[in-house]
Image 1 (cartoon, rainbow, N blue to C red):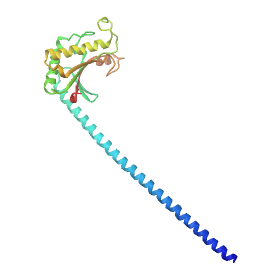
Image 2: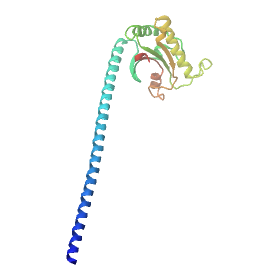
Image 3: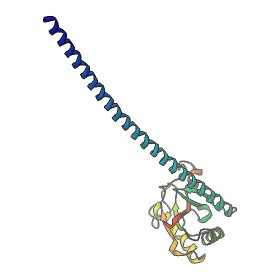
Image 4: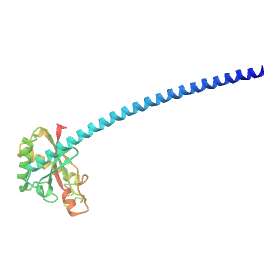
Length: 215
């Protein structure tokens, strides 16, 4: 009798262990399915993100190519004027050294600069007739000395130079005043090292920034 009871208890215990094992296996399987679904969702999300990044990179490259083609075309039209071009903040910019436009510390146009400005005005009125244009004045980092009463800082000088160029483009060359405006940055947007004479010469400039879309 004792033997039978032991056998029955053994069978019951085995059955319970088996049920526990099956239950544990089902729980683990369910968890694995949940984790697999989560991984599938993550993979789909990463694939979509990668596709979005690829599309963005393609648009960016296309825009860079467009800007570079525009810059080259513009530079070819300016050959012999002393002006150069560059891409600045997503726009094409015409760069004029101050030595072409002004005497040192002055904001009055040099006579010989007018032919170059007339050439640029012609381009603004024909090739890029629908774009806004920002005329920027820039200086080197040397403080104003001789005309400090007139230009207390390089901001005033750079703004006065940009204004002089604007008035010539509008008053003498017929560029529409509704699509042209000025900014004076003083020495605060250098393109070269102000510690060298050559760098300072590069920083003293006027730029025509062509703003695509009129923004």
